Length: 186
Image (tube, rainbow, N blue to C red; front, side):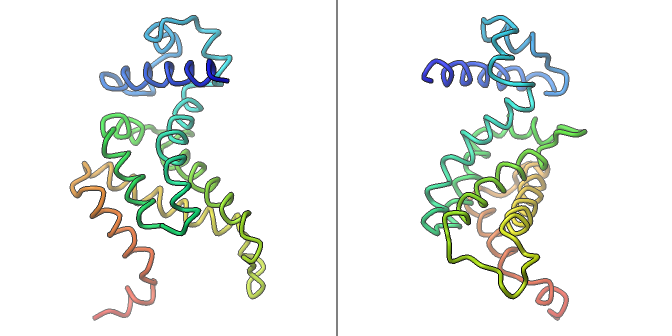
């Protein structure tokens, strides 16, 4: 297990290094493995493609560190940590944000965030939506994951003009303000 983790990290560092000079969609598996000093089949023993590697990076660097905070109801702190980790690796996450097609930043981030939110809700047996049975834990998790992914992508694409702490406050304000509040403010 230790060797698998180390190889995953080596491949991740290789992709990140290459993404500093080239668009991710132009980087080949061969370039990743050459940079890592391993053969191509090694890559495929760990990941299906470079997009799966990116999701692994997002899971390890963004989601795993925030899960304990979310488990303890520290939502703003979790948001700030997630944004700070993106800010600390701005070049890589900007490159990921520029991906187009089927595997975009928003798609991958939504999957990662929804998975964590569903896990947290699964651990809460008291969470029920009796009033609105259509609002399953999955629907709720994906809704919040999509909103977060969209806001984070917009922040990245605008060049991260405010720091992670301020962006976490902005996100908190967005999530605590209803559409009715927005449309009826004068």
